[in-house]
Image (cartoon, rainbow, N blue to C red):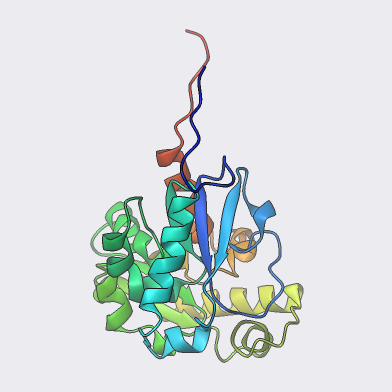
Length: 242
């Protein structure tokens, strides 16, 4: 076997590149920003100055910085690029157009697929960090029909708000889990046609199992999407017997 170095690449074997918000929080296992979440190596890249507040306010002035960071990941050999906030949907089309590797910046990209597997009379229930800001601008950017979803946010939940919006740097996992379950229960009570859950926020996959146990529904999140793309860009060889 003969291997050839790629120009400019300094490390190898990291198939998934992850663009990070400029955000202050502890990223626990299961969070997109924690490397132990994955069964494969990932490569992180901070987009300095791109804050959560700027995403919520649809501030696209960081587009050039975002594309530059994504291209640096591409140069370092990643095979696909994602990000750590569902509101990165704002930049999905521009960044995908600018790169030569697959780009999947938002967990919301899964909505059309989920809608297709639950039937036309059912909805996808979305648990969002800040549902009050999740509007047509973000949905249109990832080709989501907003009539196919039902939303519930966590911005009014005290523990999540402090950790996930106000950036206090402190996370009470048990308290946040209870707030997520409460939000899901309210969502289902208000929308009995919801047949699958999508957890939009990149910090909430650690609570997906609890959501499924409480509802019995399929639960999708950032990690289901990243794992799915990984299996597409890194195929395995099958071994077995007949």
